[in-house]
Every structure is written in C-alpha cells, then in structure tokens.
Amino acid sequence: MNTYSHMDWAMNQDICQVNIIHENRIAKAKEQMPQLKSVAQIASIYKLLGDPTRLRIMLALNASEMCVCDLAALLEATPSAVSHQLRLLRTAGLVHARKEGKIVYYNLEEQSAQGLLREGLHYLETN
Image (cartoon, rainbow, N blue to C red; front, side, top):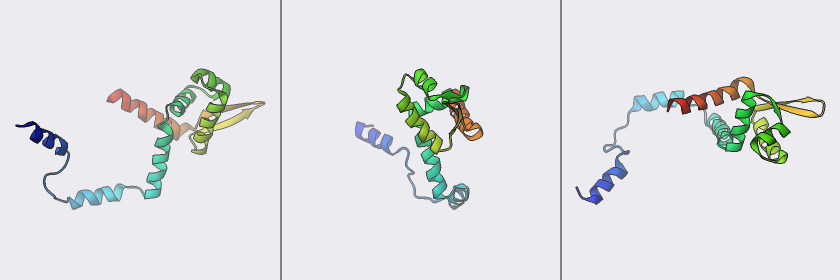
C-alpha cells in the first residue's frame, strides 16, 4: 500500500462509505434531544466549568464553604480575580453566598453543582 492511499484511508475512516439514513435512530435521537435553548444553557454551564480557575473554586467549595480571601490564598490569586470568577459562577446559579457580619461566605449550590463535579470526577476515575 502506498503512503497516499494509507493516508487517504486514515483521513476517511470515520466517514461512512455508503449513504444510508437510519430513520429510526434519527427519530429516537430527535425525541430525546432537548430544545435548542436548553442545549445553549447546558453549553454555557460547561463553558464556565471549562476554565481551570472556576473549576478549582468549585472543587474548593465542594470541600467547604469559603470566603473570597480564603479562596484567593488557596488559589494564589488576587481577591479581585477570585471575586470576578465567583460572580460568574453565582450568576449561573452554581454557587451562592451568605453574609456573616463583614464576611461573605460562598457555597456550592448543593445538588446540581455537586452533581456536575461528581460526574466529572467519576469520568476521570473510569477513563
């Protein structure tokens, strides 16, 4: 086999060699697929979690509630930078805050945010 034909095969191995449409599979996928608006919302959550700093903040908050200064010390970042990331996470509903005197403590939104982290960690452990 010459190099060109091998490369050609390698480039096309993920593409069907025939054009057959499986209507039943398409119908099943279409039935289970959420509305486009929901897909966009899910994508925005994953986009937020795609940032290592935000993900580290969420992992820290999964262990314990923390204030901005604690998170900044842990992440070796400025309080301003951490505050900005927390604002994004809070707007998305992934974290919430409670004020105690002059200190604002942040927590993960218990079920959904913890579930996202749990699934991500489980994926890493099993793959």
